[in-house]
Image (cartoon, rainbow, N blue to C red; front, side, top):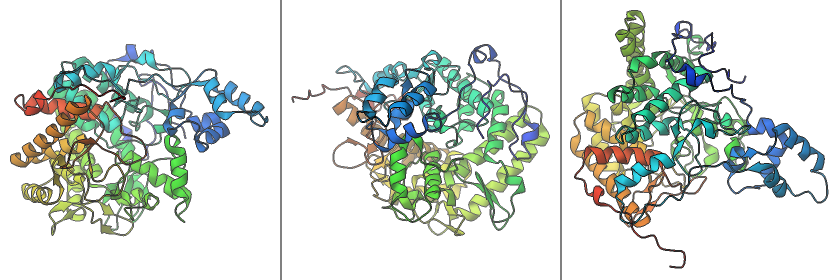
Length: 557
């Protein structure tokens, strides 16, 4: 079933989510209707649906080097006209598929990925100069492309990622908040509210091919940021928080013990926890050939592999040994079989936020109900996802009824949302010092797999969750140490290459951008800019302020 694509201020009903909380979602809308009413309802057909066998042929034959390029292309004519032309000439002896694609599609205009600071420009000034480079405007949405229109300006990560991403944006917003751009922060918030009201959830990104999944539900964290910086009252977004919760909990009330439905699992003891999920079980359109090849490497049903790959993308950790049975085989991915500690921590925060804001709004009954939900979830997390022997939180394999044993940086998520006890925080700090602390910050996992969400790569969002989570529980020395290591890593690469990147190699020898995964290292980069900008604001005396862009060598050098 395709999402309802009506603009958010025209919707008269609440979608049937199968959850008992859906009936009483407040239909109040934030007062931004003038702008939103100018957005035409989106055509939610994906490129695979729109171009049928042409899509399969282009992606299977690797006509374009990056699988994401074709699904982001803008057609020069109406898609049905292009498809008819393809069908009419594809069997001709002289037919050239690459030439056909070139003649009928144009590459979407995206923010430059090779923006380089002038020599001697400081790291902070460079970041602030990038916001305009990475900002999209609503009028930049081309007709017939896969881009879902948004009513307000928004910041994209950069490089091949030329759309709004859900969890990326929270960390990007940290920097916007300290860069004198409250209008852009507010615009981002209202875009997310628009997405929830229009589609019932925040898609992975504002692309039609991302509509079948979401990402880590961090809207509840965003509204704290809006309120802290005075751009919106958090309670203005209570209706959208309720609606997002209904999306993640759809079907939970009717589950029997041992059953799963979409994002929800009811365990044998009656506990309900959440997993990552995607509504589709086909190859990801933006990684079509890669997924087909991965599924061919196992005897598992291909659709099962595709669903787990898609769910892995929904997690934001795409991909990591965290989701694999065999750390060296992506085809062993089992994302939907796992109850992730970070996802359930974010769901705890969502429940807590709804409880708090309902109380502020005078709705005591809802506040009490969600207070009970968050307490029940905390008890379940402590019972099933906490390892008392090791002193850390782990994911739980609900299909095998046992915890996972791989330590990951996700163990800090309960600290970030205030779910953990002080004793748990102290023990997690000890584990981080012993097993995850590396020269550039906190390691993602302990495994070298070749996947980008494993060693040796480090990621800005995980550094931030660790720093803030530890600081929340008084572990200031470790929190500041991670911040220092990360800033020096980012600053040193900036000095040598005059840019920030998506991920970093947190090694002791030299400074390098990260690698691994399905695509080359991307410049930009939204969440690196956001976290680094926030840290520089908080520590105006840090040595990273003195990191200056250097002269970049020319190819001949």
